Length: 194
Image (cartoon, rainbow, N blue to C red; front, side, top):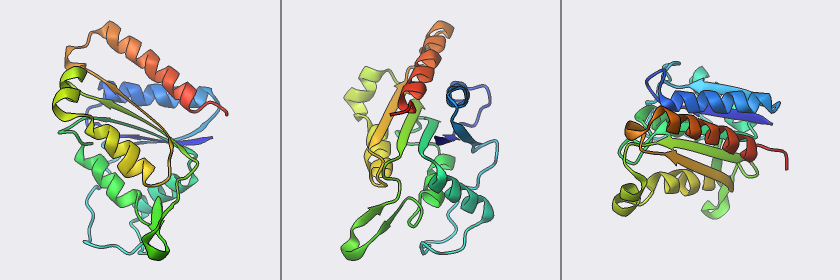
């Protein structure tokens, strides 16, 4: 399989970086082809320059490369922290500019959504500082809905899994080692041959 891995975290050495590196190593060890983007390290420009962009409009060469990689991938791994129940702005801008109409989906006759990512797999790893029981009681799980339903589900990805690791700020080195082992196993299982 060809798997596209996208990281949206600003600090090298963060736990999100460790998760992304673990996923990449696991995928490569299983024989998968991996394309990896650390959006902050690459200084990806998240700003959508026009209010409305037709699906066939010419793209910035970097954005076009990302669009081509989304089309070519059989699966996706996305890693980011939970910021105000959302991905960081750089990742949200990547979604806006890359998972766009004509790439990940389009509208057909009568407004019917044509899902260009149907049959593909997605695994999303998120981190947060809020304990899980508090998160669910106060906020629900907005990131689950965003990734599973609003983004990947809308574009046709039904084979979806998300794992949130929390509370990062309260975690011990032993917990983080266990979490990385879990991330390794989830990655291996989600992208195993079926």
